[in-house]
Every structure is written in structure tokens, then in C-alpha cells.
Image 1 (cartoon, helix red, strand yellow):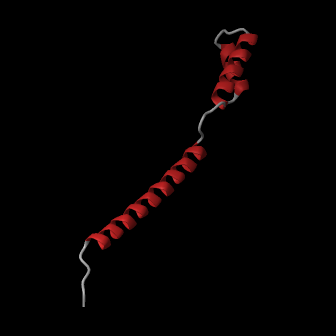
Image 2 (cartoon, helix red, strand yellow):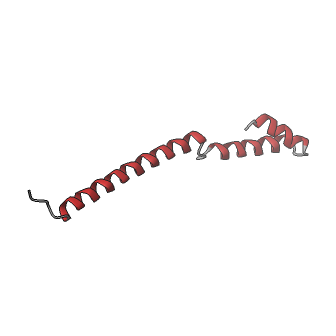
Image 3 (cartoon, helix red, strand yellow):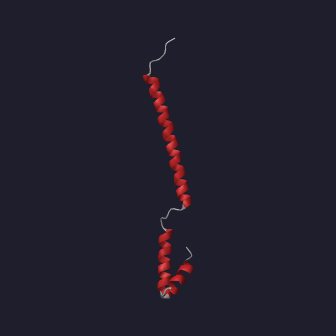
Length: 76
């Protein structure tokens, strides 16, 4: 956010300079606090994908283990 431009825009819209600057500062702080960036979302997506792959592999391994245990063993 270009705070200087925002303050000028507010002044041009009729806000007194002090109010324009204060409002711009408040908006800037609000936008900067606890807002996820695209990089944050991409990192989270990668973590979720990694967890999903791990869970899928675990489920597949469990299914094979159960099948091996439950199916009758062939005797030569």
C-alpha cells in the first residue's frame, strides 16, 4: 500500500491532512498485521500436500499389511 498516495487521495477527497494521514496509518497497520501473503499460502499448501502424501502412503502400507495378514497363505 502506498501510504503517501493514499493520504493524498483522501486529502483530495476532502479529508483534512491530519485525518487523511491517521486513516492511512490505521489502514496500513491493519493490512500489515496477520495478513497471509501469497508466499505464506504457497508454503502452507506445500505442507498440506506433504502431509496428504504421507497419510496416503501410510494408508496404502496398512492396507497391504492387512491383506497379507488376512489372506490365506499359499503353502507349497
